[in-house]
Amino acid sequence: MTTFTARKVPSDLAGSGWYELLPAPDAPRELEGNQTADWVIVGAGFAGLSAARRLTQLCPGDRIVVVDAQRVGWGAAGRNSGFMIDLPHELQSDDYAGGREADLAQIRMNRAAIAFAGEMVSEFGLEEHWNPGGKIHGATDGKGLESLKAFQRHLDGLGEPYSDLNASDMKRITGTDYYAGGMHAPGCAQIQPAGYIRGLADGLKPAIEIYENSAVLKIETGATHKVHTGHGSISSPKVIMTVNGHAESFGLYDRRLMHIFTFASMTRRLTTAEQSALGGDPEWGLIPAHPMGSTVRRLKQGRITVRSVFTYNPNLETTAAQVEKLGRVQDRAFAARFPMLPDVAMDHRWGGHLCLSLNSVPAFGEIEPGFYTACCQNGLGVGKGTLSGMLIADLAAGSGEPMVEEMLSLDMPKKLYPEPFMTMGARTHLWWTHRQAGRDL
Ligand SMILES: Cc1cc2nc3c(=O)[nH]c(=O)nc-3n(C[C@H](O)[C@H](O)[C@H](O)COP(=O)(O)OP(=O)(O)OC[C@H]3O[C@@H](n4cnc5c(N)ncnc54)[C@H](O)[C@@H]3O)c2cc1C
Image (tube, rainbow, N blue to C red; front, side, top):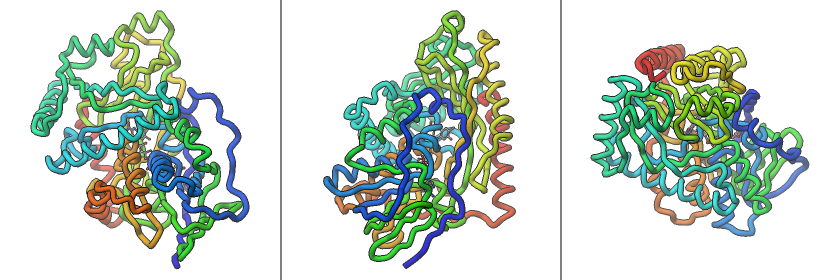
């Protein structure tokens, strides 16, 4: 028997525009008393709710309980930029490309995850939070165009379709002439992340039970595992940890997970006159040619959101001061792209937690009998969290799904470098790569 005690629990700061766009949720149901279940899933993000969904398919009638420290949608799952990406998207490269065979396998698996998510969208009526129209890549200068060309050559080698966009196509779509060129890749879905994840939680009930504001403080493993929160416990033969970087708070994958934060701002709603001054399509989503550039989305709600800057925060937290300071980078990115909207201020600013490994692999598998992890989504958890959640349920239920073997064949997350070299190295690397992003930032 092992006891895993949480050294830290998540407490994401207020401010996510996506969450604020939704009506206030009903009062939370918190875990109380001592209970038993067939399955306990810790974490109600993409991985947790996808695992729960898959278990309802594989083990109908089982009691499946999901426990989260916060409200559903309050954590990273509800505060990301919402790109559920099918293509290679290696954040630690110059142009998102990885190795050929690994990329082909990843595309196939990402598409299985998008199809799985799409089924839930149809079944739970979440179409308003789901746009399957692909994504635009935008380059702001010659260097960005070269990087896009390199990515396109990689896609040609993989047999993946895309369409080239010149500067006037980019202006026609986005309304701004800031972009020197771009491309459209069709396979990505864009979600309203808080709407999607809250919609999943509601749609999955009553087949699953969800306890919110119920941080798991301790887990005792054994023939039956016992999961403890502040006011209750659940005993279960199977426990699945889907807490992303907070795996490390329980001592799991110790010194193997990198805690990166990224930041976003969302404007107020544009007036009709401002929307006409801007022109362009009413809804689009753009990722930068350089991975360290700014991601921009125009929402059908008449707002624009900008995400930029990655920081290394090994204490798993950001601060209001950091969110405010880096918000000014988003203000500059917005002003440079949208000079025709000089009076449009940001209504919301927030930051959120990503978890990466040095070798870009997930923390996935059975670590003790009946005790599983599906964590470390390498900054791409909208798709990869969905995938690892689906597949951890397949592994735990013994379904024989072949993609499980592919996940298990990946290496373990590599050990980080010793301190203080790790923190110094990560921060220097981020500083340098942000400089390389140039106008894309
Ligand atoms: C601003 C921003 C933009 C991003 N954009 C994108 C994007 O466009 N595309 C993309 O693919 N990814 C994006 N990401 C990353 C993505 O949000 C994450 O990779 C994803 O949320 C991880 O999914 P997950 O289910 O593994 O973990 P999470 O979504 O983090 O869910 C884990 C849950 O575990 C809970 N938890 C943790 N500890 C405990 C505990 N002790 N007890 C109980 N519950 C606990 C947390 O409260 C949380 O709800 C972005 C992230 C940010 C912050």
